[in-house]
Amino acid sequence: MKPQVMSDPESVRDTVRGWKKQGLSIGLVPTMGFLHEGHASLIRRAREDNERVAVSIFVNPKQFSPSEDLDNYPRDMEHDLEVCRSEGADLVFKPEPGQMYPNGFQTIVAVDKLASGLCGASRPGHFTGVCTVVCKLFNIIHPDRAYFGRKDAQQLAVITRMTRDLNMNVEIVGCPIVREPDGLAKSSRNSYLDAKERGAALCLRKALLLAEEAVAGGTADAAQIRAVARKTLEAEPLARIDYIAVVDPDSLEEAQGEIGKKALVALAVFIGRTRLIDNTLIGR
Ligand code: PAF
Image 1 (cartoon, protein in one colour):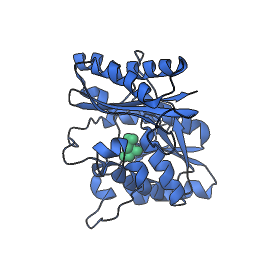
Image 2 (image 1 turned 180 degrees about the horizontal axis):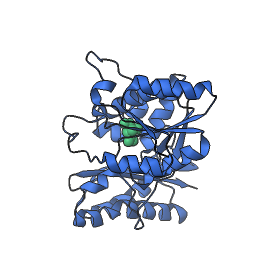
Image 3 (image 1 turned 120 degrees about the horizontal axis):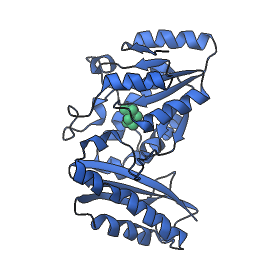
């Protein structure tokens, strides 16, 4: 069945109110569109867990800095609606920027420490934009559960923190990273890569696999784990490292000395002009 497609937040609220009256559970998959298999897996998971599934498609201007290319962010609404239909979404919410941020809009939702390192350090204001729009989406759709990919590990941690801190009545569900057959993490940004860059982008996965191997082989020192990843990334001429981090998976604080039971190895790397992120959870 075709999903209902709506742009007006008030119409969405009416529909959702009807669902709530019937006691139906609602899963939300927030996206910026240009949907790929990673998004499809989130919609499928939401479908399994909930009686109604809403997908939002909104390229959120507030999470782009002036130097980032909002206008060129990839878009393909026809394809996105087809993915939503084939994965069984009930509602697609695709507002215009003016409907989310009408004249006079001036509220922000900001998470402090957790949002300041890693991607937050190189993309100032990014997570405030993310939290502001996600908070609005939660207030419009009132989902019981919301689904986010683990590729954006910091985003997942920040949104989880926001919902706890602000007593939001929504369960945040983190879902596995979906990869291309050769290991590159699926991302809408992969569409920016030319053929040479696409090959070079595999260095992220390679660096993470070698870090995993080092830990499996007994390396526990965070600096050594970082060094393994650095060596692999530096061997790729098209790669420019933004950060290599070995952090506590919950606090995202940089591990010093020996890692604990679990640590997150997170990378952000420019391949040409495209900034890619990936991560892996390592354990001892
Ligand atoms: O991960 C994304 O696509 C975006 O950051 C999100 C969560 C949809 C907010 O705009």
